[in-house]
Length: 626
Ligand code: PRX
Image (cartoon, rainbow, N blue to C red):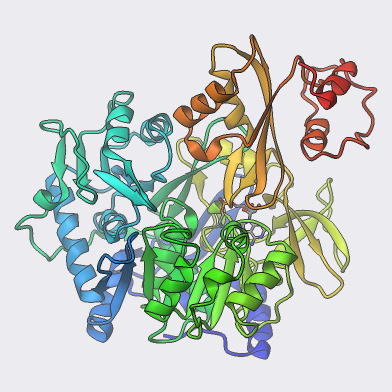
């Protein structure tokens, strides 16, 4: 089974074929997997519903394709290579055989604790191999996992538990992050005071942080697996059964649970992984994301393991014990493909070249970027100093909703251009439209980025609220999936992503809904109203700027605390400006365009303010008057 494209001409031919007959194209790839029963029909779709189904009536278990299928050919090969937070702690190599056993054993343990097909399980864990084991064990028994980034607060965790009515939480005592040890279990305890559906909590011991274990509810991971069988018969799933829910921010206040299903997600993450990174047998691949985000799902766990790769998982942070940690780990493990976020690159760039000096980085073949537009300056720094000028740099554009990489160069196969995601992958049909939804063809054009044909890992719904899915992604333009991003096709025909065109900001590669942050700020008893916008930030890409109307003065720190409690430290504004009013239209809508300009320091040209209900407020805000 090798669906790796190996030349530019093969890419062009494959792309053409994939667009002419997408069903035959994807069917060929799906055929290389282990199915209990093949599909009756490849695809049924309608973007109006939306109603998209791939490999209809196909039966499978994704973990049989990750584990059982690889036992004979690569049982002893390392599946997960784990590099701990502390470089002096022993790293771990878990072979495919060992991973198989760990997953089977934990599957049995979960079943013994009441979890079965269709139940929702929240995973709130640090970057330890057990987090991947937890995800795969859920998939094996047909439970639906929802990983929540362990930096989210108890409130944010409770919201997600409640939204999906989770029956179990998998967590740890604590989390090592750089020089800090963070409490994790106590956050879960607090969240569970606000939710009633969780029956059992399994706690992995990592930091030996003292925790309270609630009788009848909480079990230690090591006790749950003690003496449990290493064999487990995987549950037979339908291709369209839920594999996982992943919550992501949108332009309304409440995060939505993006739903991915078994068959299509399997086919697409495998195919895109293999082709974008041009993974060779025996390579060591490292993606620095956290499993709490979609990148961690698709390109640490599912894609690489489906392809039989060795995937490295890193527990720590790029600057611990020093700013050379990434490069140290690359040399130590002879990493061949390295995939990270522009924000990490910019943060490391700020430390200069000294941290790189002790390292050769000569094992690297491919470097990648994900999460936000990579500016040209950071692109060149990364390409020259990390890739030594000879590794293709793949700038991969995609989203939680797309499940896998959609627009990217294939490393070493298709040309790269700084700051351009470049070309769509085979099977992906992006188009750029104007405001009315008219397709803009040709070159040197700019507009909103849509996709006109389904691909196997497109989101199927937003959990518990299908109408929201329709509204958000399928109602802006008829028969198109709307990404929420703006894009440009340049004179060479390459795509460049311009960033969000909705009220979503991208902070350090993480999506943050401005409404979500505003809702949190407004919870503070002294706050009357707030408006949040993004502004250019040297390291984070975008920073969070909050304009707040409040009673009294000096409440900035309290507001930050409220946000940390309600969402988590990642949503804390970089700047808070107390104001006495917000610029509003006559219909009462906040004019964010003006606030965005003020936040970005572009006060000279604020555009037309005459239609405002309260134009005088603009001068006050500009001058910082409260
Ligand atoms: O605005 C785009 C930006 O990140 C958004 C998706 O965020 P999320 O679902 O959290 O997934 C991030 C990881 C896939 C997109 O709508 N984005 C992601 N990758 C790029 C990007 N913008 C520009 N270039 C990219 N390579």
